[in-house]
Figure 1 (tube, rainbow, N blue to C red):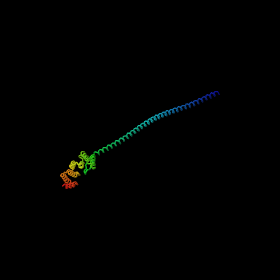
Figure 2: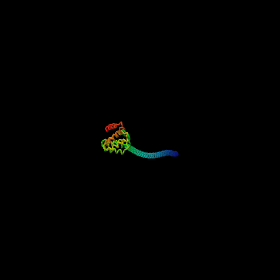
Figure 3: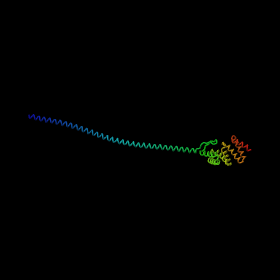
Figure 4: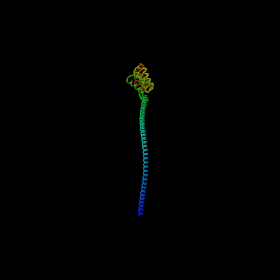
Length: 254
């Protein structure tokens, strides 16, 4: 019986030992599994931290890149604004220059119009005359037409002194002779009529100038000279109206 009890006690101790060993193995296995899980978690945590760090660095770089891009855009915007301003100034300057060129061209054209010879027609003759020359002749003739023969004489003398070789000269001499005849300056009148005939014998008013010379000679009681002038008129310009008048006067002078 004692032996049986010892055996039972031993057997129970063996069972307890086996149970302890089983529990210890299970605990060791659980402990092992916890270590693996911990290591996996730590690995995941490290990778996550590295990923977060990488993302943070990328975000920082991206933010810096965006800031740099924004700065570049601002610089470009300023450049575009300055370029636009410069272009507007250039367009304005070009417009001002073009307007000045137009003004200068207009001024040049106006000055040229004042000095360039123009074609005129007087007493059936066409020739070139300076604008100032034309104005002065017409001004003198306007005075003559108003009947102010003293002022007309002065104006025509000044004109001939200034434009002695002008195409207006024969006509100016003719009207100067008439103004002087009206002012009783007979010798001067006759001299200018004769000069007119000498420089322009084919002038339309040359027959009238010869007739006027005869009138002056009659005023001066030079009947012989008047007859000679009338005869020269009829001979030189037989078809003229002045020649018909000359024929009538010669008949009365006899």
